[in-house]
Image (cartoon, rainbow, N blue to C red; front, side, top):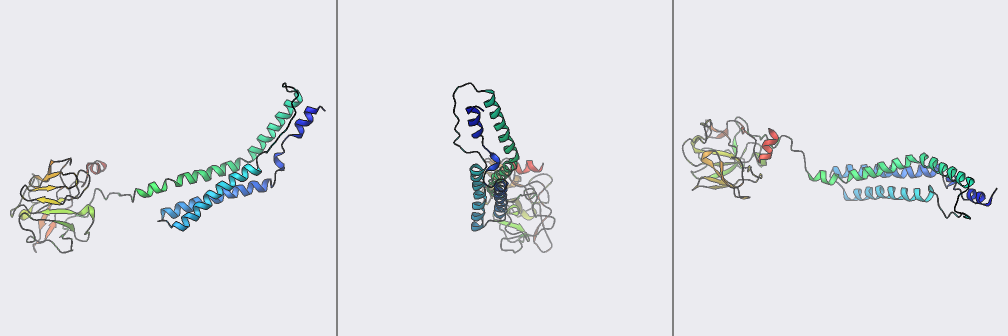
Length: 300
């Protein structure tokens, strides 16, 4: 046997003889598994409202499991040098090439057996990456569902002041205004309505709305059709509603049509009626979606 062949064979790395062998593979796989469980626990804890101490502990376990597992993999399951082999000539002999191919085949087999660890590492890192989306998703808030299109106003809803008392036909003088809600839903942003009284006589803002303005009372959604700000200012002299956010003006006598500013469409009007006790009530809900134009398009 030549000196080159002896040197080549003596430098061949025995992958299966490393410390722990299969036991070390199991240990590293368990580390990745623990990291995965900690990551899932961290996501659940964060999604349910969070608790800083628990989140910190789970984050430590998740990162430590990945870190220790990767270090142990590199230390105990990969070949280490130095490998020394004399090279007397640049051209390899048939014996050298054969020894190299056999060594390469053994390494490939070992790496193939340990593909499970690679998969566990990938799953752990993937779960930790998905976890980074949770703060973004939580910041979006609850899903609005149909709340942007449907309010709590319906046929017969009592018009109620912010203190919970009903609004009667004698509560506003001509030129007055107030914020009102349907009974039982005081403070609900999508239900807020600006109630104005430009006149003592029945008002018709548009054809088809002949009964919507009894005794001079008109009601419009306070949610601006531009950006959703509350329209809360009534200018008695011009009989216009003003949105303070971007200065959109709405003419109440023509159905709150926009006459200035960026608002693209009128404020939805709430049809009113007066019951036998003189209390204002709604004839129905709004006949169109409230709020900005993108809400309307989403409903259509």
